[in-house]
Length: 328
Image (cartoon, rainbow, N blue to C red; front, side, top):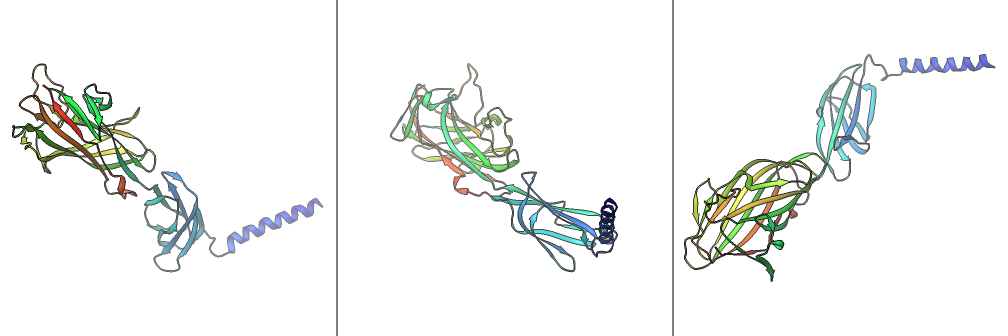
């Protein structure tokens, strides 16, 4: 009985070997192998994905899931592989590695990997005005009424605005953002006095930080007056009863799936020499004395660079107006 059992096993082994030798398409000497795979946010992904594996000439192979392999079934030559539908939900194809078109050689294995990333959404929300770094709701000389903030300021005070911003997508992946921040300033009273905006453009005036994480990397910073780029130490008028827009355009490299606090030190109030001021602002608001009134409004816009944003509707936000009075 045991001899009969071993005889049957031996026959099966021989049959399997003969299949490997004589069945067409399974010969490593004449055919190559192709593996089609996918990743999502850098991690291997398996699931439904329709793709075409197409030779330079001949019949196309259609697949409907990954990963999948064609061991010693592929004719040597140039093959292209590309998706035609399916894939991870809420994701887009970023790259095909090592490339969409590759050479398949007899006896060798070739990989096509579809690399998916989660769809990206950049958004920004106004957080608060601050004066000298103090949120305006905690500032002792400020109050809120009928949709406006009111505050008294004096020489060397710094007017700042804070936003919260975020880019949804693959956690930890980096992205480049182009950002434009605007300050609309309206000189309200008294009439026809000389009020000026001096350009300082301190690099530290625009910051972006994350709790317990490295700050975002700022790549560029360009301030403007009425839409025209300006340089340090230039001085521009703020006419009475006229809306004037000061802005700054910056570019950043930051990580996705992190909440960043963006701080913009817009204005320093008046010249300050003794004691010296801690300059870290974009513009110096030069007023000839106390009892001047201004209304400010801030807006911020973010835009993905060379990437698709799934919801452009949340790329901008604006502050409630702030009415300032200089009190000397």
